[in-house]
Length: 387
Image 1 (spheres, helix red, strand yellow):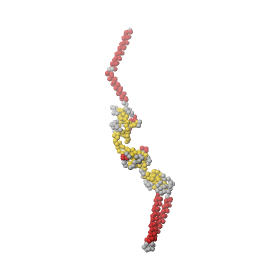
Image 2 (tube, rainbow, N blue to C red):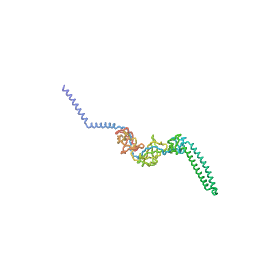
Image 3 (cartoon, rainbow, N blue to C red):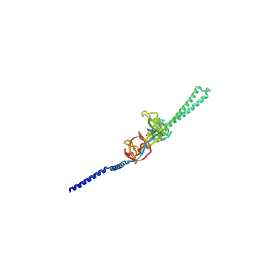
Image 4 (cartoon, rainbow, N blue to C red):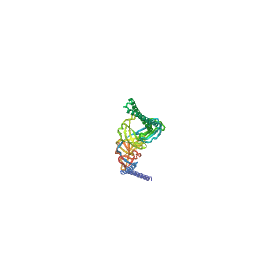
């Protein structure tokens, strides 16, 4: 009985051993190894396809070689073209009426201040009387001299007496001329009691006050002649050669407004302290206010450069980057390479890239802020060069 049990157990062990051997042979057979390799390759391809999933769909652009405008940037202030000082030409009179204020647009000859003229008028009347007296004296002297000349040959009057009459006539005529000159002077003084604008323009300041007693030459108003204003930019000696009269200048005012002007002249001298010269630029009336400090740009020619759209440049940590696209695969997937670049001038929607750059490379047009070095993107379209 025991022998039969052992025999059965032995049979089971033999069968198990055979199964293990057959299984080992099956797994080591070349056909099965190829099948396993095929399944492994498929799994790897599936995993690779899942790994190469595009992070973003992007457009591509290429750098463009452009004729870049060269711009000279200057700083300066707005000034009146010319300022006229309005002052009294007569002294010792009181301001009786003020007829203009700051900001008033005035015309040449327009009254600005009226001075009290009572004393001047009185002096004028006095001088009129003096002129009348001297006219009468001249008439009497002339009459005497004429009679003396008539009887000169008769011997009724001595030669000395005749000379006295003639000299008296000449003296009376001189006194009348002097009186008439003084009369004209009094008329001028009367006109000077009315202070008028020396030219068309705008009143920029006023120091005249009602009741003040004026002094000759003391400033009463300051006038911007003809309302003209100009911008005076500072330029160093090296930059002067690039400027000439007639050039267009763009001024950037507060609020982003721009004003165009033209170079009128360049200062022939350089300031001893700043070593800069002044550029005088005419700008339209009322386009700015004197005293404003603004920046101006002058186009001085063109220079070849490499540019890309502004959207292709991404700024991180104070540096500028572009994302270059590696060659795309059959599915349109491409790997991006983050490249640090140095930017230059910007013009319109383009920005200049400095240094050595592959002009045949393709860059991500926009969306760089959402990308990192090595990301996979799908290129959907490609813009034209320089677009």
